[in-house]
Image (tube, rainbow, N blue to C red; front, side, top):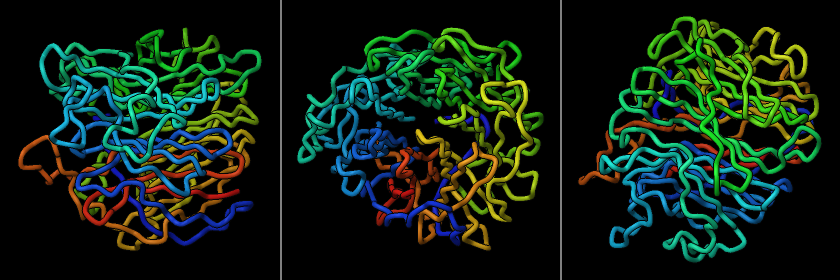
Length: 475
């Protein structure tokens, strides 16, 4: 929830730049239709692209991690519900929740091909001092879910585990992250490889561990049983890099695990920021020295023409065909904040990266990049993009894709209309009366990829508040 360098989000239309091999995008599907906001989406998808599970910060009455799923490739979605075991509320004010915490968020959902389950991770905090802030994991089985029963979170039998702690802070999380030990802004991935060097089905999660002393090093944990038990936390960032955020774990085609993140000389500095990467060749147990993938000479700490927060962040993926590591980040050296990309000069070798270039040069603002690689090596990059609006207010969703590990890109509009991200506030449902003065679109969006399509999920304007939307781009 807290960001090292502040960020924001929204969506809008842009002129189509021809994407070789890409089919027309389907029409956007509104997954949520709430009184309170949905933002910070995560998206898991089965290898055939047919079973999907979306998650988001659910500012509805449960104040937790919202969910929906699809069993027909994303064409239709179950009525939205929530992940049980995290918060003490449900979406029915008269029914208590099954968790001990008043607040949960920062959701992660990934499909695990070893078990056929969706692995779920959320951050939970607040409440009594004895309730330490925690990262918690569980699993969801769509085959056991009842979409006609969203009030019961599709039936508790679909949740195969109680909420299992991954990491715990020393405070209850009511403070800001820098003032109390606080695991934040986690991201996850699963090793889908079965060959030498792989740990098939291993679930990885990485996060920034705010220390309570102004530092935020990167930690990682892994599980070989869908989150029932964990190894870690394991320190990823080295002693020379202690002010970090945006930890993203990824697994290469040879089983090497990478974690990218943003680093600065101190918690608040925007000077000498850089996109850093470390790697592990033993399944996440030990890590290399962190290296600079690219300097970020002009990071943004806010967005123009917006009350919602936004700025520079870092994400990555690995080309599943070549093994090249691709790293994306925001920088405003060219004038407006744009998405830039670099990649390893040689697959698996972190000693040299090619100079970073802009993916889709624009005089308008771009932010919240998220990367994923299809099995055939196509790299997909989803991001919010104001190129549709000469006034740099309305925000679009763009999908850029690369067939050469990020050296060149082609782009396609995902949305057909723009929206103003300050139309709705993110109402805090856990105060009475609700506080709707928080302009917050989240800190990231999502894309999941197969050889046949890229499925994008983002926050946009619904009829009453900020809602979650999704759309598929075929290849």
